[in-house]
Structures are given as C-alpha cells and as structure tokens.
Length: 94
Image (cartoon, rainbow, N blue to C red; front, top):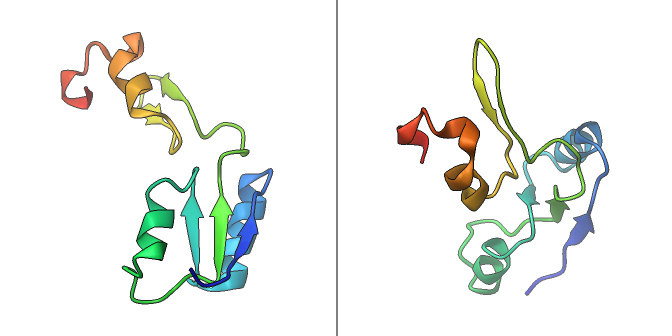
C-alpha cells in the first residue's frame, strides 16, 4: 500500500474542513473494513492522499423521527436499523 495521511476529527466541521483541504483526494471511512482491502488491491483509479475517519464524531449514529422526516445517521449500523422499534411502521426500510 502507498502511504497516506490519516485523520480522526472530533467534529463534523473538522471533517468538512479536511475534505476541502484535500480537494477530492481524501476518502471518508468509519473503520475502513471495506476501503483498506480495496486500497491494497489498487481498485481506485486514484489513490487517496488522506483517510478521514468519522467514527469519533458524535451524532452520526442515530435513528430519529419527527413530523417531517425520519433521520438515520451515516454511521448507524445496519443491525440497528433492522432492530429499531422506531422503524417498525416503515417495512421498506428494514
């Protein structure tokens, strides 16, 4: 594997700032179990200069419902979605 920078921001704003700084040459990860093997196999047309790990950013793993929408956070695990009582009345989401 080629070298790359690795960042673990504490806020969404910090992650967005890093994405802007790397101008499309960074990849977002939440553990990297899918990305790291792809990097080893050289699957991507352009190798990332940085990896930005989102796991430490609070509020990205949630399931919320209000009058207007259902919100499912980007880091919500599929198992949490399947088991969520909040989503029982929305079978297409399960």
